[in-house]
Length: 114
Image (cartoon, rainbow, N blue to C red; front, side):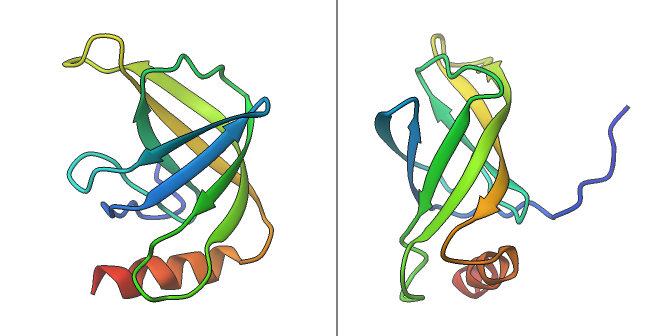
């Protein structure tokens, strides 16, 4: 049974930098396939990111809307991609906002989409 989402998802191409366990890797979210919301973000990777892993996220490149957003999160789901062998879709739930707020992030996403 699917529950109602607290925040709507937006299909936005966002440069995304993530660190988990001290290892950095960069991922750009494709416009057509992944999303971001006020509650979290999803992305594809070839790494088997552990569930519940704590992460630091830098969301940058939302047009000319200023500085990058630094956000803390944790991995809440990881699924094998049905069409891409060795690829996973990972969902991060935002758990803390360092130099921005959830409301600021949502406003930046909305402004970038327009």
